Length: 313
Image: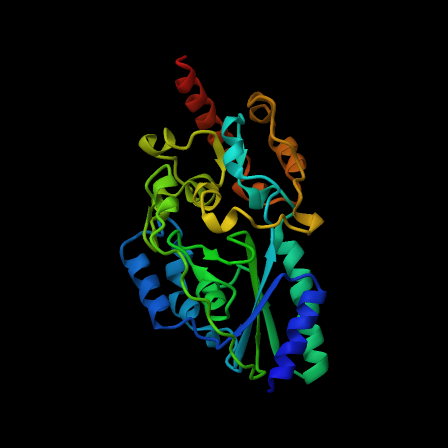
């Protein structure tokens, strides 16, 4: 297919509301595969056994779509209006990405619309994905020129910082690959220094120490030594993102769906006293519901104990 086809797809994607668009071959590359193998071999994925269960699928998108010749990588900005570092004094902190509407719902609708448009226009075979499929989205997004994987392992865009939700469309159209973005982290170590639990080494992360993993993914109680380092974080963590220089001058998202759907509590008791029904209602259509009521209450208990310890009680 010609460059004009790729340009038309990019224009349609942006018309549908995507902020970043790029094209790559459906192969994350040998370095990304080696990094994933090492990550799993060293057990840094913690209890996320699903990553290991479908390793071969994760490394080879063709296992999900044998006819694929290209992948369209897409991003939507959820950049906040203020720096999350300003939330340090709140009774309980929820990661920026989880304050708005669940991005899976927001993005999938647009991804399906783009895929239908591609299928109708070129009789293309297409499949859409958010982060629910075994696909190495960050390495593929880097190959597609959306940014580079920073030292914190998240994607960094010169235009959107690290505040990008990623989605993709596998297709049998042959589209010219975009030019990958070079690594622009340089000598910066801010994300590594900022991590409260020491989960980050340059271009490596240990999920077992990551507050996002501990408050969302893990099915086990948070180890006492790490719980003390969580502070007031009850769902996710933005510390490595909030200190990144590339996030300092990023314009806030223009997508109303990602605006906060709930306010932080005036005191932690407002959330600690929610039963399961109240929890589901309060956090309806947001990613917070994914943690489940029991895990969220456990996280709130940790935040309360940390606040009491800080106050010397």
